[in-house]
Image (cartoon, rainbow, N blue to C red):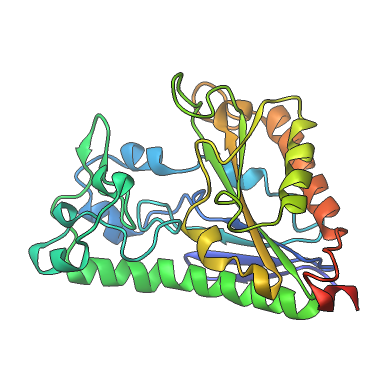
Length: 291
């Protein structure tokens, strides 16, 4: 039986022929820009592309053959940030009628990196006008909500079949600056400080990452965002981790993929999926998985 793909304009869900308990989320590597988004932008598309986890979907290219279901965003992060909650915006970034509902912004939201990205360093506001109700509704209904619904469906289907599910939320990152926690790490494994995955799982992922010969950090400076916090249900057998990979490990200086280095990481990630697919959680934690 061949692998199965479910496509919409914004999202792809790829199921393997012989599936396992791993579900991979790739939320920030989309490269499609709907005409509505480009028309609303006050900056060039090349500036919007800076938001992308450039080409990290290529790292997940072998995951389906290794037994994982892959849920991948096709639309760009500029449409909506799938790793932010719907309430994550700064009041000053939205039209006046919406400001009351975004009354407690965090650091990232204040920097313009909310559920709709609105600003970037060196180029200022991304949009010609503040995000209004219609624009926010369209972005959420067309992209953000369907992605999370698809991810929840695949995790539930996997959990029902195998008794447990493991979510890997895959991202890329710029090099971590000096003076920032985690400086020097080329991969960061996040479990929200123990909140979304058990130690045995994190330890296994960390050990696999260290086999690349690169420095690996746990939770510093990226502990895991909205996706793993939302979809982890450890008491119900669904665990989640976030993996960040330094883009300099697979991109050339012009931000295009280096095929040799991409292949190395893609093989590594497929082997990680295979390993986790054969993992058996402890019976007292996931009794159905031991039956």
